[in-house]
Length: 426
Ligand SMILES: *Cc1c(COP(=O)(O)O)cnc(C)c1O
Image 1 (cartoon, protein in one colour):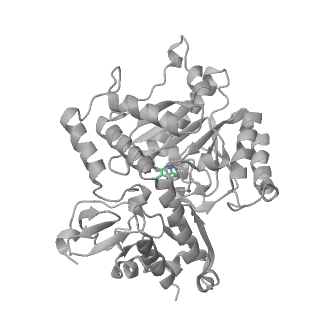
Image 2: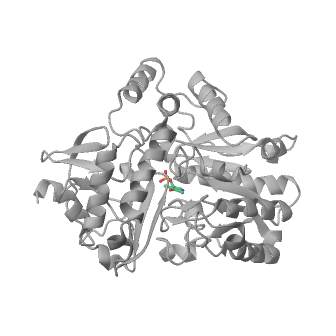
Image 3: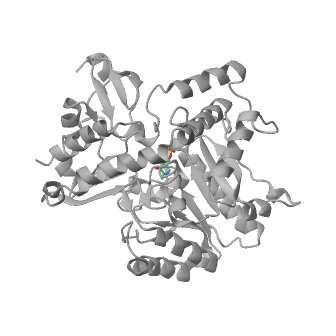
């Protein structure tokens, strides 16, 4: 298409430079849709990598940023504080599982995970267990693109196998297979596999990393709350910290505020990002329990946590996160998500033409997330262009065609999305 786009110096993510198509230019957005320079309006079935939970140009979020910009755009959090950071930390402590009482801010989900892993290592060091210096992660996991995070992503199917030689080595347990609504007996095999790795390697394992209930970028694998409860018990038994990566699942995506709420489990640390600011600015929070935090109270230089991203606690990000949370609660987003979820179930799970289609391996819905898993990525070749012709922005990951819509998407709009997802298989 236009040569000015072809020659743009912008280097796009996850793109094959030889086969990538010119990226359409977005000029604005409103609610769950955005507008292109060409005049097209696309209903965003992905809410921009799952973060624009209120949709585009939400008046309250825009105004929160404008007002904060008028007062204080940024100041370092080293040795200083400000009301937006303090208020947001208190709010996050209030809404997250009981016991997570301390908040370390950073600027992205990956860095939030790096902070959690570093804290876990230092936690054990400070207790005289310096041998615990590896992580335990799960197959199908995705925890981010920085080096520390790449090393805990699925080492086979993940995107980072090219870098294997560069990365530290960790332990991996099989991805849990029991579905969300499995009974405890059906989860036993998944937990036995986890126990097996812990029994053999717990002396060098600092923390277990879990994307609770929904392994997102690694294939939208949905698992049972019983798995989280079992993982909590195993971590306690083997003196391993439990870290929930709720970067994708946090803020309603699985139908509760946090995936942890389905299981009534408090992890030792929890990482939030994506939906935290309603997607309006990059930010992240790593929450820790009092037990973790208090281990860092001591006299030696090693007791300080040596980490501090320049933009941690950025006032604009904190202000818009506070407004995002206020809207979420005042406008009963959990109620909306339940409705969206019902429509997704009805349209996708109850349609046997879809579920029994030869190219479809599985169809899953959890909260405001739905996925059609195919037998191979080739089954989805061209689906994004085809959806765009019908006004829907869909972007499959590998062999998974999914939607994670904004929570302001109407019932009729959800049906537009599911029609296109199903239509591809007709
Ligand atoms: C997106 C994501 C990350 C990484 O967040 P970035 O902000 O892209 O660095 C980490 N963990 C999970 C579960 C994610 O979905």
